[in-house]
Image 1 (cartoon, rainbow, N blue to C red):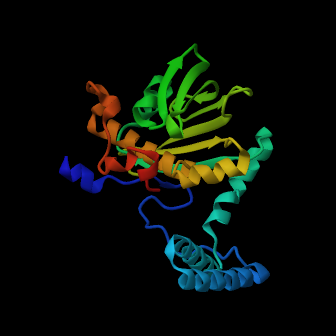
Image 2 (cartoon, rainbow, N blue to C red):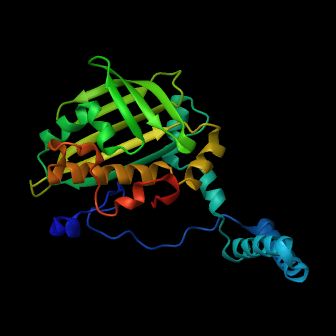
Image 3 (cartoon, rainbow, N blue to C red):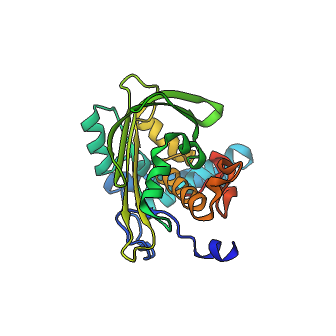
Length: 270
């Protein structure tokens, strides 16, 4: 089991090779011109005021000033990043008529036969075994299933999803009913690995955040954005199928190494 933990590969974005480390490139600046100058000036003023005043108010002012100084010095604002949709998200929002979209496409290699991986995912009741936010999936008929999904602050959402594409051993796609509590869509594809020893699983999950872009930002602050969620879910899928936990009692509680990352929204890491 220790050897398995050492070799288990995490899910990676579709745009990156499976075995290559992601390039460590700095995020492009999104604070420029007058906005950047105002951040520097305002940050310096707040920092000076906070240091002179002291006390709780002074500490808060100094911290805010320091944040503005960093924003101005680096020309980068993480909050603006979270509010900016990717090209994929803009396309999905336009296609489905959503006010906004949060989406992620991730890939992982599972060292099990393609038909086995497909069959496990195709039984939607299995999704709750490896998707952390899915509490339960009830299959209604051949095309429809009722999902109960966990949300921050102990909330739950329930919706009905429709199977819109099913190519055995290759691709599954689904989407929620239009009047769902949270509208979402997704697909998963299965391909044999080049060495024939496993299956490359590529999954895309997208949803319309409540409250639009503000909800998108809140999800990222809670570390509930699709990137981190889909990566973690695919790691669980890999762990369950490769270790045989799927056939054991209590398989739904099986978690891969580092499972403490998955306990609460506040402790997850992307």
